[in-house]
Length: 205
Ligand SMILES: Nc1ncnc2c1ncn2[C@@H]1O[C@H](COP(=O)(O)OP(=O)(O)OP(=O)(O)O)[C@@H](O)[C@H]1O
Image (tube, rainbow, N blue to C red; front, side, top):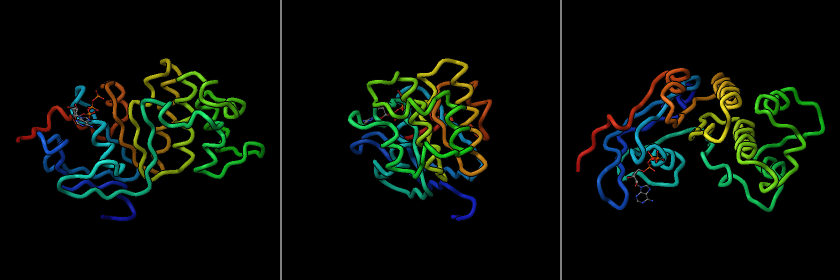
């Protein structure tokens, strides 16, 4: 693995649940800093499974996955935050920020996500699904990952906000590589260096 450039390298990955039909067979993927690769495919084709494998929540039956520092943005923002704590506390758990001092980088991200600092002092039940989704994106970006996993991140947002959020996500490419799960082929064509269609990956077994 070229440590300088490569943020994800998957070699000969094979995986199937409970040793049933393989979803992945000898699957390879390399992602470098500055690259965005979209994963598309019909429901049940294995998109989320790939993210679970990369995150280390599932173990490959064969093959190897090497990755640098990851942060993930999931489709369901409620799974990203604990209901009992304020959003800001849960951001501070993973990154050192001070909302009271001037921070141009932080302010730009908050504005691009159509958030404001007051919202960050609330708990999950006080926010809409879309606001919570944008908070989860903020936290993921503030973590400054080498590899950003994005699973249908804009599904809860209206078109204009979704476009601004995607522009902000794409802007991170100067410091990371991005793997994007999407059902939106137009979005994939707009932002991707490469599109992997899982329907075209033929497995046997
Ligand atoms: N925990 C599990 N145990 C057994 N089979 C599973 C499990 N999770 C997913 N599967 C199966 O693995 C296959 C791939 O599922 P996966 O969730 O990765 O698909 P997906 O492409 O992300 O689908 P969607 O677009 O609907 O989110 C499906 O056939 C699914 O039924």
